[in-house]
Image (cartoon, rainbow, N blue to C red; front, side, top):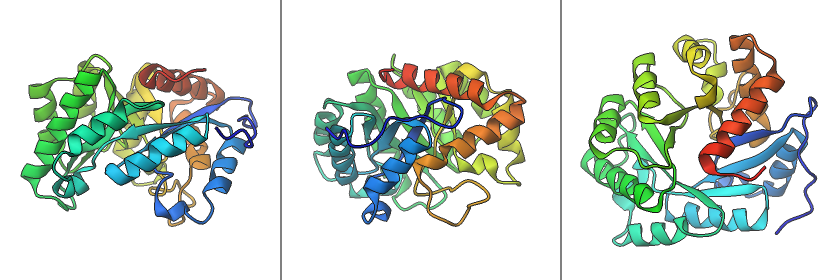
Length: 270
């Protein structure tokens, strides 16, 4: 367990949680330790490091074992659904049962890129929903240009007792409302800082504070005004500050709320 990184503490003294990062991505191979240290210096108390296939899920679990404030999620992204090997679900289950693995995911549907055939995406999504229910772990859902299909599957299959999150939410208010009724949390990434994201910004204002989460989805979706550069967990504070400004509330107050929400969903220690 790594103890060399200093404890988190932002300028306002309020700790944050990045609920969706991809620190195992090759984008960090040259400076991963420095990226993690910057996150701590910026007040990020905990990070949920999310897998998108078996290899990245293994790496996420290993990194969580190395750092006491990093946790892992194990899953197969819709992009990788067609490449999931036979027996993938058994290995995913073994990973998900492991120490410091706090969720199944990310999984879901992506009809924007369609990197896997849609039938394969649906099958793998439903299998992981079932696994999350069986293990009583929250599920992390990816949804891009597949809102109706995601909702249809969730209505049919149901959400387990541990709940889940629609990460990097991109739907409309009606979808958000239905997901809230199902018991989901809604998470916002750097997209909420983009000037043209007016619908998303309205949802961030209207969402019940007890269901709101923040994330980076790093190395992607870097917040404004740094868009185009590599993202990292330290920048989750920019997401927080944007939403706090939209809601007209102190950033420290929203930080406390989102941190409590993340710890409740993922059962993270204080």
